[in-house]
Length: 256
Image 1: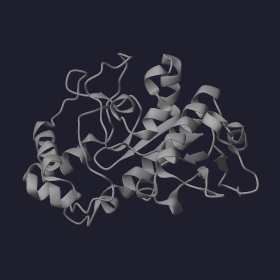
Image 2: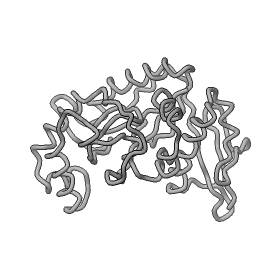
Image 3: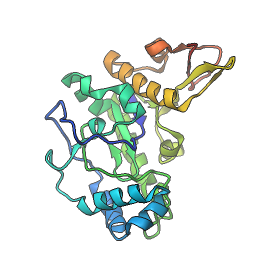
Image 4: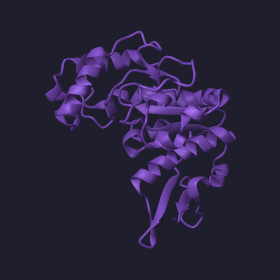
């Protein structure tokens, strides 16, 4: 079973990682091509490209200028510990044991607009580049065109090594679109998380993102290998809802 999740805009490069183990991203040659393009842009151009404030444009201009290889623990941090958004707060990777982090290296992949596909302990340097960004690179009209063949190949390889052909999609639509599903050699399972609001169950983005992280942790801690076993997930009030679920799309609901 392989899990895919999205990266986060929020980053934590201040706290020390709880592990000394790390790996190097496998697609840095492609990343360097994008960085070369981004380094030529000024802060205002970056703000316009990414739809962000002038302040964030300046911050990311500085990040891109400082980005360089080789990656080391002195200038980079493990991806699963550097990302700090809602999914990662639910996953809380800093409290996973060393053996569970090692398991995650086989069972978990993070999709990224700059790095393509990341293992949890792959070192990254600070960046912001969402997959939906309309960044052109030669014949590639956007990041989807740039990354699609390479990401699909890497995900297929990871599924093959994961122990089963189940791919648990806990990524956002923006990031999962970077995989060519027609060429994916896996059974796709996409869990959904909904909260009771005004008498009906609805997906509330903040809670759903956190729940994706909780589900990721549940799979790692319990060494889940088949889709049916996902139904046992019951973290923070969420429970499997058979009435709303369908094949390949288990739904988990919460009433409070």
